[in-house]
Length: 142
Image (cartoon, rainbow, N blue to C red; front, top):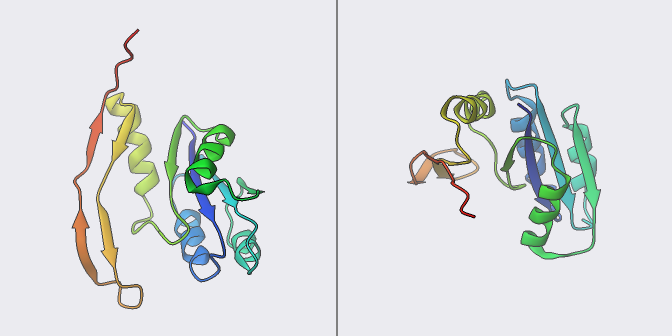
């Protein structure tokens, strides 16, 4: 089961390295990283290309807003599971994607969300936690 991660960027040179490294360090190997860039004027794309996984794809586009860019990422994604990791976010553990993939396989679910940890960048001290892991089976109604 392939996992696609979508990252939208705009002048994200200060944060994109840590975002990409957190994806690069994942234990899951069946992973694609789609970056949708809003024509950044800084070093965002050069940094993203330097710290990329094998199946990274970068698309530059004019501004269609964050939600338009996410929708475009969904259209371009080839994975059976699609996740979003914003350019100023990162995974805190190297097995997160593999754990998510296993949950989708074992629980036969359609949607999964989990905790968010808000930290101070310099200290990585957890400021607050928001949410609990949950998963849902979505039933189509015709």
